[in-house]
Amino acid sequence: MIRRKAGVLPPRRRRPYTLFAIEMKPRPEIVALAEEIHSRINQLAVPNAVSFRAIRREFSRRIAHASPQSVVQLALRLLTRHSDLLRAFSYEIVSHHRLAFEQLTADDLLKLGEGIHSWSTVDCFAMYLSGPMWARGRISDKAIKAWARSQDRWWRRAALVNTVALSRGGNAQDFIRVSRICTLLVDDRDDMVVKALSWALREAAKKHPQLVRRFLAEHQETLAARVRREVNNKLTTGLKTPRRRTKNL
Image (cartoon, rainbow, N blue to C red; front, top):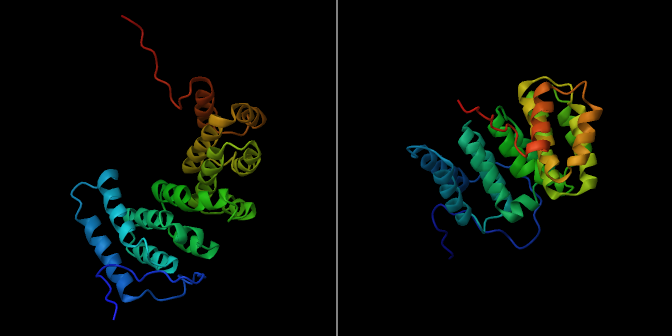
């Protein structure tokens, strides 16, 4: 009889998986592992990126041979704690498990995105999961446009943050897709959306400065002042907010 080490999810099978993580009730070992992660994160005296990632890497090693289905179930289980840290943890463990990320379905993605409620949760979701999936053609442009038209400010922000993954690829054709999402939100004055639009255009400006200049010119009358200022700063100085020169007294 094969004994399973405590706190380790069952190994992945060799046959292909279709993820049904949303519908299936998590197994006891998944619940136990989620509780262990929760306990470890809570024990951090001063949570920071270094200590957080050390724990995440440890658990990523422990679930390296788990099935994609089990990894997504673990991520969903962590979300039930309604903790921003555990939400980030759940997104990272899926992103860093190659098969789980490769087999993540659109339905799984939307379930993982339920409850995004702040700039940090949105950005983590978009940077680790939805943005890379869109860049690889696994989410349609139509779906991202629907996010941009959402009544929920956080899904509108997610639509813009998704463009960062496309812009970093450096493909000029991808800027067309980026600009379409940005155009849908040029007149949105929600602060979280305005800041995301500035980020999206500043990221695009790194590889496509002329295209971004053209976009600014075309939408000069509708873009928020913050967007115009920060993106122009990026284009002219390389910085979002350049330091002011002080006069010698």
